[in-house]
Amino acid sequence: MGLIKRAIFLQNITQIGMDAFWRARNLVVVVIPEGVDFIGVSAFSSCSSLVVVDFPSTLTSIRKDAFGGCTSLAFVELRHTNLQELGAMAFSGCKNLACMYIPDSLDRVVNNCFTGCTKIVPETMNIDNRYQASKIVNFLWFYQTEVESDEDY
Image (cartoon, rainbow, N blue to C red):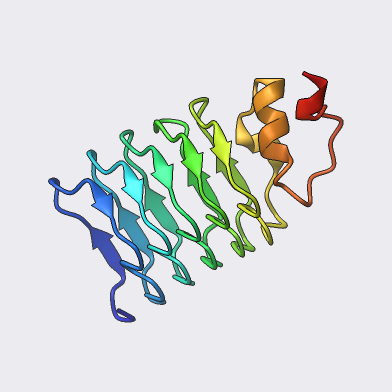
């Protein structure tokens, strides 16, 4: 896997399975086609050179550790997707992740999703709803905020 630099998938796939590109350390660009709704556990984990991921609008789930340890990833644009779930540690260890744009459809973020993402700017997360913000911000251990907790609603 170490020699792959760019991944462009066939148009007829609907899922990227577990460990599909795990530790593909030379992978730089991933273009995920429309129709893919699921990115499996550790699918791109430890792809330390990964810089660009083009997500499809059909995406609904990013599973545990899917992009964990992608230390070169700095920007993630998900606003145009139908993402509903971010699994545990989905982007943990992405130490250069600074911008994470999320869609309004996101309603489940599992613990430690952004652990180690110390450069992320919460303002880029596109969180308009205070209730949704409180659910997501609870998992951003580095983010200090005045947002009220779920118990206040």
